[in-house]
Image (cartoon, rainbow, N blue to C red; front, top):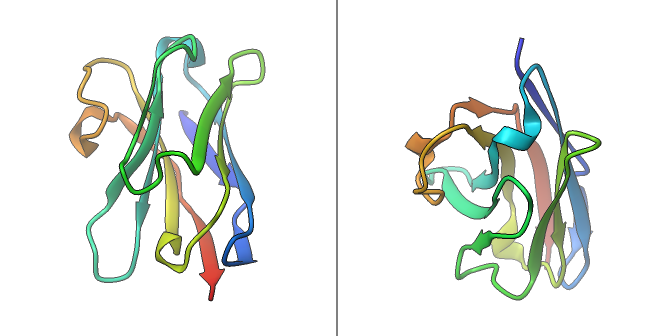
Length: 124
């Protein structure tokens, strides 16, 4: 019943921007920490960003700090990832995830639900 559906991925040139969205259903959205992870071919899934229940607390991977911004709209059950100054190394499948409990937001094991992913490709 729980579904997380990502959208907004695509092809963009280096230095460009994309905004990813993740629409959640089947859960009490405001009770979940929401996170974004990404996975490139041949690599493990890695943490990108996370946001707390009310949106007041956020965390970012060092690799995206200052370029990406995570936000949420609890009235729309949606979390966003604004990606600016994109680099070729940002190319990956981006996954939305939801965590009901736990505070280790950078760890995959904390998250209870995952979306199917959306492809982001950044050309040089």
